[in-house]
Amino acid sequence: MPQTAPLRILVVDDEPAILRTLESFLRLHGYDCQTETDPAAALARLEQEIFHLVITDLVMPGLDGMELVRRLKAGRFLTEVIVMTAFSSLDRALEAYHLGVSDYLLKPFESLEHVAAVVGQAEDRLNRWRQAMVRTMEEGGER
Image 1 (tube, rainbow, N blue to C red):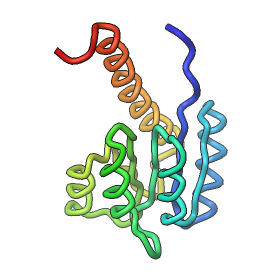
Image 2 (image 1 turned 45 degrees about the vertical axis):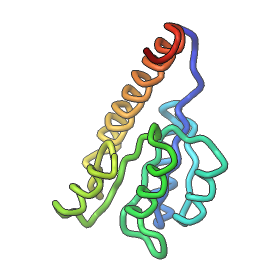
Image 3 (image 1 turned 90 degrees about the vertical axis):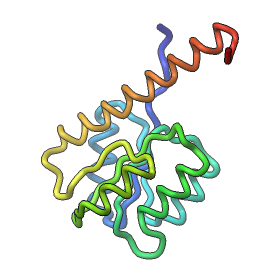
């Protein structure tokens, strides 16, 4: 199988310390990780750039994480989304699931290795989609 480019990840959180930690950690794991503290700026980047995975906080000033997910999923259904929050509720988790969020991380994180495992699972899902699309195209498209 040909070598693919590293997974492009956008992390969105209004806490710079979280961004620095995740960016450093994910880059050490070989990912192309970018960050944004402002969800509106993140949305603008998502309209201009391709990211395979978005990890976003739910509670942020201005545009909240759930609205960011709504807008993202409306235009790019194949982008994986992981939400993270320190304020968990069953209603928010169910809403996130119905919007197409692939995973939910509680802050403070269980461990950074747990974050790596969740990101790895998202990468595996993306790779399965990529392989299925390539196979479909090679077989002549839709039947």
